[in-house]
Length: 304
Image (cartoon, rainbow, N blue to C red; front, side):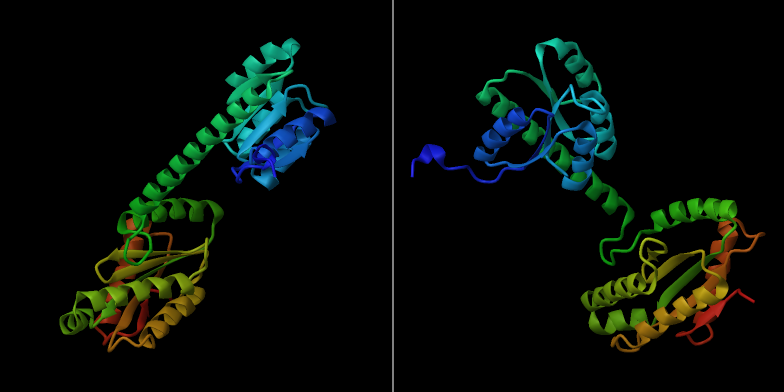
């Protein structure tokens, strides 16, 4: 087979939005040969819909479209994905519109009739830019995640605890719902560390992180490594009874997790009107102190 007719390796996904079937087909064949996966749409509305569902890397979109035009579709697309790379296709008569589209966030424009090599070059450039932006976004997200989480347990850290608690108290007062707080720390952890070493101790802390995550509701409640071997969990909308069942589930799971003599003491507080942020934390902390000094491996509450 002639090497010239062999399509290249997969590069990325391109969405072509154009109401002219001939134009769509020419670009589709050209880009498929270049190694792109290609999807098409013939109206602005369909282009927006396929952006949301198909998640293309690059969009080639005509300015003149039936229904919403290219500029309007561009605005909607950038609401879906603010870093989306969109190349506008424009006839000479709509050149001013293309310049306006650049102001609205389009990455580039290509004039019709276009030269094949030029179009491919612009799409390749656009893909490179988009992949760089995606990588930057990913790195920024990772930096943010690391700044609010504890490396060892994967739970949120002490600083994030107070940040979240502050916003949850505001939300709770506005929505007039319940909010409960668990504070707990490990019984016999220092002795365990002295006996088996810090690496084994780290395994225990890691396990606690897993137990907390599996015991609370995903995307509703939140778990924290408060410091050292002390942990916390914020239970959103949870009444005293509901929080008590979660606290006991955590306590029981840790008791049976197979680490010699490692148990937890848990302090539980449900928010009361006269508390305030510090008073709320103190109530859970005081309850934890009582649980700890009553022999450990138990839940103590400031509840009814």
